[in-house]
Length: 434
RNA sequence: GUCCGGAUGGUGUAGUGGCCUAUCAUGAAAGCCUGUCGAGCUUUCGACCCGGGUCCGAAUCCCGGUCCGGGCGCCA
Image 1 (cartoon, rainbow, N blue to C red):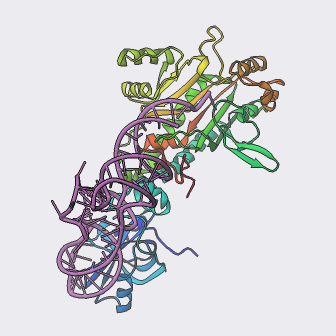
Image 2 (image 1 turned 45 degrees about the vertical axis):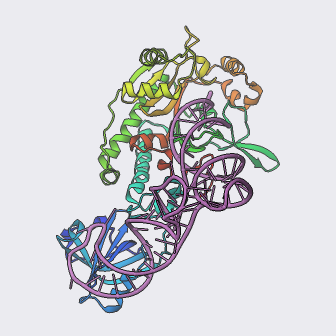
């Protein structure tokens, strides 16, 4: 049996006289002597429970006055429209139950009277998420996932899951987490890349996956974590330009849906929310390098990866989402297809937000011989990729795809300072608990 | 990994060799109070990251460690 009839957010002055049962947390208790107020909080807002000493029995008044903050309470009572109360209504209780008392002192203050450091918040994340502005980000994340799935299904893309426990440690340069797999060593996968490409060879034609990726890099920044959720797609008989259109559409749909459906959460975050306009600017790597050289006077060679400072400069200069295209083949992975007439550049692209990279993708190499050659060219041994290469020998359609970091999308969308604010239980170099 | 900064009640902070028996806010405990909405008022409680050193004297200076924040690097 559900222990509430209404969420606080569903109660309005218009239902004056209705009996409701609310359940949630004791946000604050203010006892003024002859009158006491209990503010009950649930995920949709607050409700003021008003106890007038003369009107409620002595035991109830005393019990409410003694409730510790953040205890779980259930309140049955009458809705009364009341201009003096926050939200224009209050609840006159007939019954107040403490379902589970909270210990004191609290590990942090969910009412936000006192600031709290991120590390302290993460140590008590369950309590941190009781704060409306923290909860709002995760509710928006859920909305984004919902609309993206919807967007993919509308385009006839099939949702799949690929393994997170893998044998290959030879995919590329990044560090993998080794794990013990019965009598063998295995690894946590850093990307579904090879698997979603194999599914193109399987004739699934268009697939997407939303799932975790693991990177053992010892990076230590506000925009990297060692466990992240990646939104990946792969599309057959499509090129880089086609999947860039899909990516741009995905990002705009996400913003659009949030703007239309998450006003309460956006208000909790106090955001001035703008939906980006498609089409996004597309500039080539070479153009970006020129722009950076002109604007910043920093020695950068063609073929260097763009450093953080250059990325930031480009972001400030362009000021909105943009694609960086036509990268040097040397700094993109082996599966990125080089231009036929100019093999020094390739059909790889990054989707950039002014603050950081959000996604990267490419038209892929689908020719077996070229793929083997490209793997060798990166100093890797093709024999380690046999399970993958096999799919390229029996009919592999031309294909393209991308991977988008969910938390970075949310972080930039909601102007969060730290990626840890966009992940419920983040995993970084130091944090393994909770 | 590296550079810079930091660690003081449950939480957030003040403090730059003696004035620290450590500031303020929040919190907690007790009391007063009938319209609070960060309620108000009174009383009380609660802290110098760990180890070593310098000094008559260390929260404060030095060394080592641990942890944290920010920048960069790394991030096929």
